[in-house]
Length: 126
Image 1 (cartoon, rainbow, N blue to C red):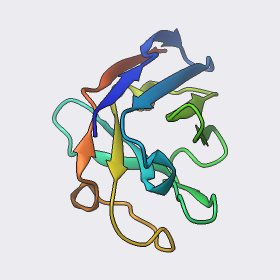
Image 2: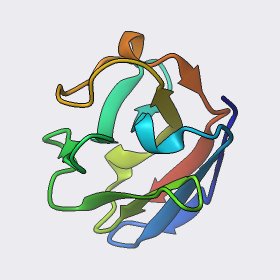
Image 3: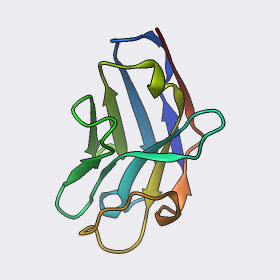
Image 4: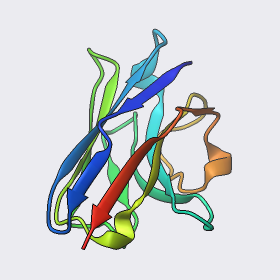
């Protein structure tokens, strides 16, 4: 599975950006898709994910209410709509796919995903 993330950029605090991730693979609809981010000097952290089994979405507390993850199984894409951006949202954002296992659980650690995109930089200025 190949993942290609795009849509990053520079934005002022309070602004919005939408990240997109295009995936290869004929069974995209059975992947749990997630977004993670990594700020300089920090560990890669979970942001949001979309379960394949029932469409459940879940978020890190730090982005809940501001970010929305969505997927289009017909186009093999997953989006991360980010609004009310804060300087602390500055990071490289990665999309990830978990291509195996049940979609009934919540997967929030990087070790639970087996495919990663190359990352896209998001910079939020104050």
